[in-house]
Image (tube, rainbow, N blue to C red):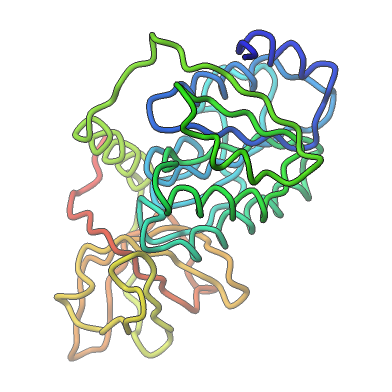
Length: 289
């Protein structure tokens, strides 16, 4: 198998247009990505597309986001999201089509601005869902190079379906990879949401001027009711008529008599928002530094 150092060194000569990293959770994907972003310099604009909606680095949790890499790369805090797509959840499970649509849209946006792409993925690789998810993602993204981090042979069912002409590099998982518990992952998501919402403002808007759609596993095939019990503390996407997500928000109050809703969001101007995409997760915390 190729070592991470050999992979990074080889990129200086191969210069693929797009590189997709696959691996289960706790296999060292983030460490490898950071090494690639620090070392790969093709002399052309480089972008990263962050598809790990549960443990995101570029955009807030629940989003697929992309950003341009400035040289030298010193860490994720310097990568500003240039665009994001709200998926409504922190896992693709039960939400596959919305997730894949978000990935495809963000890769397309990034390709318009950068000559080279590095694409991160979720750690969902097991079972029929993991297999379907990764196969469909490869079909839609069409990477030139797939880097597969695996402990044994867990990615081979996915890799066996990779289209002809796509380069493959298999890397062994380091025995030193840290294992994150589920509470640690949830705590990371909370910190990322606090960071995103910390300087937010509240907008009082009319129900009548908005279209409400559900995203995420909870809303699959269901209509979103404009009712306090259904909407309070939901993480939402603020979407334009063109389908662009301008920001995330939180539903903080629902006034049925006035037909008004209070939305907490970092966006200062929501006049272009025509649709509220209601997610499947609630976040009742008050953002604080």
